[in-house]
Image 1 (cartoon, rainbow, N blue to C red):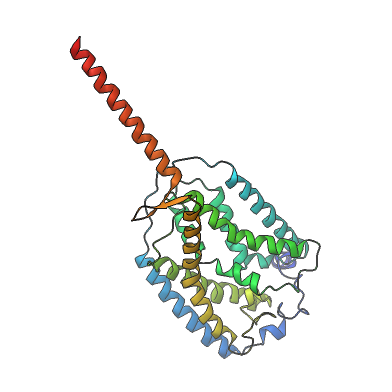
Image 2 (image 1 turned 180 degrees about the vertical axis):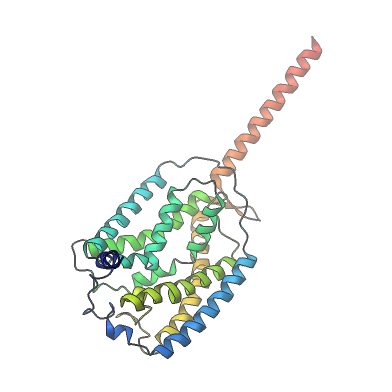
Length: 311
């Protein structure tokens, strides 16, 4: 048993270089006092449990709609690209014996997006995951604005970093373009239940899962143990500041991203506002064709009936 745990530790986190600032190690673990960590964890988990409960009580998932048209290949192309980039990233982690970093939120969001691209559009689970992950996109934006690149020394590691985070921001826009009125739908902009649910999940994931593993392994997972080198709020209160700005970003940025995406898609003529909801133009065209077909069939039936009476 001990040897198996040692083997897991060897490929999962023993390759983490503690000499790199913000990467982990004893100095990172001792950045905050145990009392401070306990108090902040209690505050964060209390907030997380409340927002998670609030979201679960109020969020609703629409019924699975009828699939109107098949994808034309763009979805599969994006899926292949996402899998390729994520696979290269995992390869880097295995080669450097730092697989534990796969637990960082941006990698989790990438895995969710791969599932969204691969899953058939026939499940309410897809809609639920899509709505939750829309409120996690702030992580990719922060990673682009405040990149932590001092650990990426191998060939193509920097390029993969930028490609992955830009793909995270591109994928939801594509899914909205192809899925408005289908399975990839978002809640009304005034509905905060999914944002609150996501807020609770993110807080509990950071302060229970990532902090627990980080303290156990001395690895600074998503900067929950000590601040990143690019953190503008570096200091003993950096996690309190993080609770404030992360809350604001989770609750607001997903809505802003959604609104901008819908406005752009409407300007491009991909979707149309009916007065109650956004509908894909392809769906409207199909409905119009169906209406024309029904009208033609009705006229044909009436004509045949008239011919029969004439005879």
